[in-house]
Length: 164
Image (cartoon, rainbow, N blue to C red):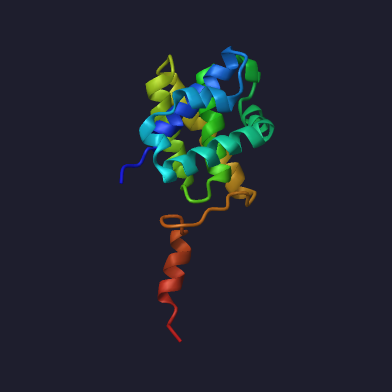
C-alpha cells in the first residue's frame, strides 16, 4: 500500500496558496488539485479530510501561535508559502494524534525546501515550528498516541517494573 501523505500535504499547501490569491474556498481549491490515486485511497482521503478540516476549523488559533512566535513580523509580511506550511504543520501537530510532531516538522522543512523561494525558508519554518512545539509540549497541549509516540523514559520505566 502506497502512502500519499507527502502528496496530500503538497496539495493542501497549493490549495491554501490558491485561496490567498483567488476568491474561492479551500475545499474547491483542494478538489481541483487531487489526483485519482489519492481520491481512490480511503486512508489517504481520511488523512486529507482530517488535515484540511483541522486547518479550516482552527485557522485563527493556528495563526495566533504563528504570530506569537514571529517576533517583529506581522502575519501579512510572512511569505505566503511559509505561512501556509506553518499552518499545515501546526494543524498536524495539534490535531493529527497519530503523527509524531517531529515527523510533521520534518515534512514541513522538506516541503519548504521544495516550494519556498529562498534557502532561508526551511530554517525559518524549522525555527518557528520548533519554538511552538516546545511551548505546546511545556503547556501539556500535545496529545499523541499510536506507534512511535511513546515517551522513551516512560517505556524504560515500564520495562524495568516486574510483572505481577
